[in-house]
Image (cartoon, rainbow, N blue to C red; front, side, top):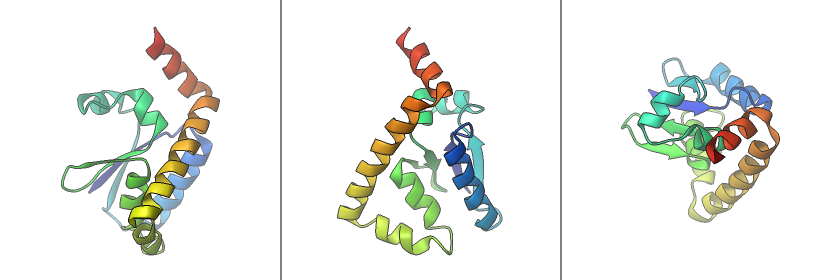
Amino acid sequence: MITVYYDSRCGLCSREINHYRSIAPKGAFIWKDAIDYADQLLADNISLHDALLSMHARDTDGSLHKGVDAFILIWLQLSHWYWLGRFAGLPIIRQIAGFCYNCFAHWKFNRLPHCQAVRDNNKQ
């Protein structure tokens, strides 16, 4: 199964993940809130800061995917999203999508109070 770590305290993130959950094939994914599994992520050298900044997913081979690559991994498993995953995985498109995702992720992170608390704790 694919394990997806996401920010459940972000309204947009939660709505999107809940949509994927509702259409995902049974047994394809394990959905985990990054905050609840911060220790498990840290064991994989992923800080809570990084986990809240970008979605992470571990594929069935154990490889870690971050940001737009995590989305592509998810989309390729979903029948209605499969072609978007294929398209987004094309080299130039993936670079553009990655840039856009990173811009959005930083914007989201900088405006959510729970993310700010994590960022401020990392500064200390």
